[in-house]
Length: 330
Ligand code: UD1
Image (cartoon, rainbow, N blue to C red; front, side):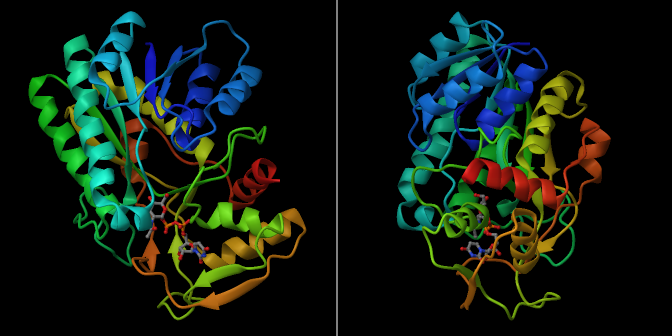
C-alpha cells in the first residue's frame, strides 16, 4: 500500500500521515498549504519519522486534475485519503461558491485523476454535521439533513463517491464527530491559519491570554447543564481509524460505506472547560452568550458499526485530549 493524503499537512491529514508512517506505510502529502503551516508541519513529521521515503510532500491543488493524475502515477499510489477541504460553517454561509469549488469540484477532480491513474481506493473525510439533529446517538442510517452549506458540500461529495462505485471505486466515508487533541509530541495540533472558531483552539487562545475569556454559546439548552453536548474524539484515535479503513477497503462487502468515528460519549461545553482547566492547572474564564446560530444541542455518535466493520474504537480519555491539545497550543 502506498497512500496519497490530500490536505496532508492539515490537522487531520498530518495525524493520519504519522499513524501510517508508524505502521510503515509510505505516504505522499498533497497540499497547497492554504489553511496549514505546511513547511512547519513537514519539519515536524520529518522529526517524528526519520525513515527515508516515509513521507514525501507534493505541493499542489486538488483542482489541478492533471497534476494530481501525474502524481498518482509517478508515485505508484494505490490508495487515497481525501482530507483536503474547507471546514468552517460560518465561512461556508458567507462564501458558498468557494465551498462548492474546493469541496465538491475538488473531489470530482480527484476522482477523475484517480480514474485516469486507475487508483480506485479512497477514504473520505466526512463529518457528523451531515446528520439531522437528534438527542439520541446518531447511527449511520440516521436521516441526513445538513443545515449548513459546508455540511451540504460533504453530503454532495458522499453522493458523488457512491456513484463512483459504479465504475469500480471502493469508498469508505468517515463521518468525524469532534476531533480534538494532538499528536502526543504536541507537534501536530489543530492550527488553522484563519477562521478559528472551534472550542479547543479558542480555549488555547484564552490560556495564552490572547483572549480575555471564552464565550460559551448558550446555557439554556435541554441538556443536563444547559450547554451543548458533543462527542469529542482524540485526533490520533481518529487517525488510527483511517489506517483501519485503508486496510479494510479491499474486503468491505458494499463498495460504499459510511462509518462514524466518535467515542459514543457526550460532554458538555462546561465539562470541557472544567476538565481542561483541571488537567492544565489553570483558570479558564467564561462568559455565557446567546446560542451560536446553527449549533445543535447534542451530537453523539453511535459507534457499534465502526467496531464491527473496522475493529476500531476510540481509546483516549477526555483528560488525554485536553492535555495533548494543550501541549500543541502552548
Ligand atoms: C463545528 C462545525 C462542524 C465541523 C466541526 C469541525 C458548526 C455549527 N459546526 O462543530 O460542522 O465539522 O466544527 O470543524 O460550526 N463553543 C463555545 N464557544 C466557542 C466555540 C465553541 O461555547 O468559542 C461551543 C459550541 O457552541 C459547541 C461546542 O463548543 O457547542 C463545540 O464547538 P466547535 O468546536 O465549534 O464544534 P462544532 O460546532 O460541534
